[in-house]
Length: 250
Ligand code: NDP
Image 1 (cartoon, rainbow, N blue to C red):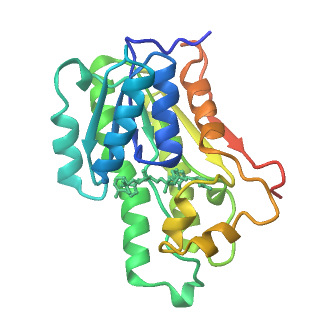
Image 2: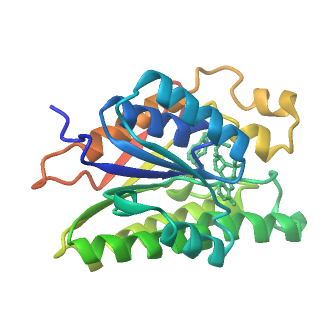
C-alpha cells in the first residue's frame, strides 16, 4: 500500500521531460502534491496541465529553475509559497551528458556544463532542500545516479565521473542524516529512452536513435515506478540503492 498521500509534497528537478516528468506524474497519480522544476517553462506548463487534467485533486506548482545557478536555486526554493515550501520528497533528477569524446578531445563547454549540472546543481538543490527537511525532522532525497557511475567506459569520462559523484554524495548525505531521519535513495538506471540522447548529441536524432539499436530500452515510467516504490516504503525501511537495466543490456 502506498504511503505517498496528499499530505506528501514531492519536488522533482528536470521534470520538463523524461524521467523527471514521469516521476511527477506517478507521484501525482499516487496522490502527492508536486513541484516541478526545470529551465523550459513551456514544457513544465504542459506537464502541469497534464497533471491537473488527470489528477485534479493534487496541487502542482511549476518553477523555472536552472540548477547550475546557485542564486537561482536558493531563490526558487525560498520562494515556494505557503505549505508547498515544506518539501517531503526531493527527486534530484536534473542531469545531462554532452557528446562522447576521448579525454584528449573533450571540449571546455562539455566539462563545465556536465559537471556544473550533474554535480554542482545536484548539490545546490540538495543543500537547500535538506535544510527544510532538517528543520522538520524528516524527509527523503532520491538521487538520480546511473550505472555510468559504477564503472567508467571509453569516451564517457565526464558523465561517468559525475554519476560516481552522485553515488558519493548520496552515501555521505545518508551517513549525515541517518539520525534525523532523512532517507536517501540512489537510483541507477541503465538505458532509458528519453530526450537524454538527443541532448547528448546536440539534437542529432539519428545518432540518438542509434544508441538504442538492437535492444529495447527502458521507459521513463519504468524508472519512475522504482522511485515511487522507494518513496512509499514504511518509515522503518529505506531503499538505499536501485540498479535497473534494460533486459538486453550487458
Ligand atoms: P531528459 O533529457 O529527458 O531529462 C533531463 C532533464 O534535466 C530535463 O527535464 C531538463 O530540463 C533537466 N535539466 C538539464 N539541465 C538542467 C539545468 N541546468 N537546470 C534544470 N534542469 C535541467 O533525460 P532523462 O530523463 O533521461 O534524464 C534524467 C536523469 O536521468 C539525468 O540525471 C540522467 O543523467 C539520468 N539517467 C538517464 C539515463 C538514460 O538512459 N536516459 C540512464 C541513467 C541515468 P530543461 O532542459 O527544461 O532544463
